[in-house]
Length: 519
Image (cartoon, rainbow, N blue to C red; front, side, top):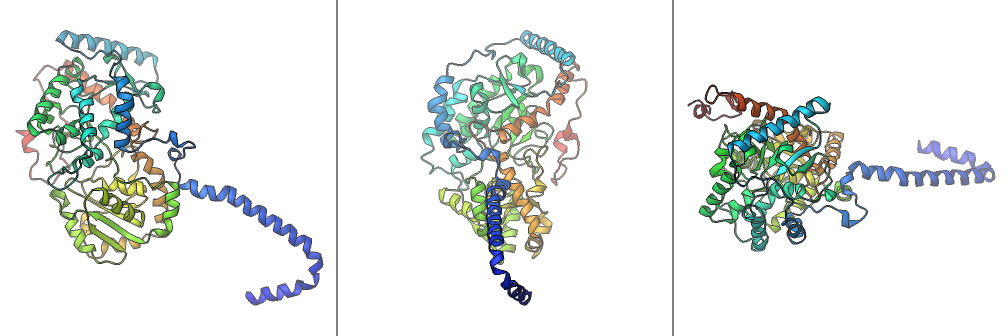
């Protein structure tokens, strides 16, 4: 081939003088072609990584994704304006008569819709009534966090910094801060706040269950839980539906534990279902009623620019940094650690969450193709969302894991899901990952680039962010909640029980886990 080219070149040598204008034209064409490439193709390559939510011409428009920074802004600037609330009709005292009146008004409104609105009953936006609870359940707890988070020395028994844990589970803050913002500042079209209970599809209970659990003394916390419970269950809207249309953020598995059994009809916002029954009791949680929400990531987002820059650096095949000794479902971690330690291109290190830990995890994830996400004390772990926003393909080894927004997102596009039985076979996992061909890996990475915005809580909350997807998922529960609410209002007390979803065999290996339900 090379020889041919030489001859070819030699052959044209005689026409040298005539070819100059042709060569000049050719060079102009090539230069023009290269310019086109630089104008269109290169931006496209970057755009294939980009998400609309991350391109902000003015940095001041960029949504705030740090809990601490957003909270500071909220408490100092927004809260003073909110403390003179819009008049809402939260009941102060109530009677059965109030419940009956509310029921009639709601029925009238729904009948009107049924006849006039072809989009009823799942018309967007869904209408949410936010309870105006006394400050001790809301603002006071946020201030408590704000005033103590600099002393992050207090840790839980297993060494996690308490304030960091609160931040990881701060979904209660992000949803509430968005709902109570002035309508002119809000960007979500899926949900609107209403100020009259009769207009509401759902009721949001803005009690900070996780902050109170971690930052109050134990007895003080339990007393506050009981007060919050009494306050909510006294509301006519609660009595009308027995709480079915009420939303409780219970995102840390230990929060609100002492009184949860009294609100088991309500929609719980959870990090997981946990079929072991250690955290949530089988009769209290179900995918039909509740909602799984992502943890708040502990690492910074790797945006389009970062993804492009980190691509050549991703030389580690599989990365894991965390605690290898866990309880319950987390025993798989120790086995995986033993199986994978010392394997070429695999990094498995012990580590905890602190500021140094965050940087080590972030660096490791940005230098790796795959990130191991094994079960912890519960089937889920914040690591999954850290991996997603770092552009590191999650390898999920957790047989009981329930994932957030799975009615909307397809995790097979962004994660490799393997059974724990396969994962602990000698050599199986690494061989499986190495067998994926480059374009499959590329597909995963491109999907991750698009998916990461679904896991970034922010203020203001962004379209297609986790707050938006939460309301889209909740909208889908509306008809079923109405069915059960109306049914209970007509069924003779004690005449028959509803066969709840938990009459079905639960997703569990526990010995006869139905016995407590049947007794």
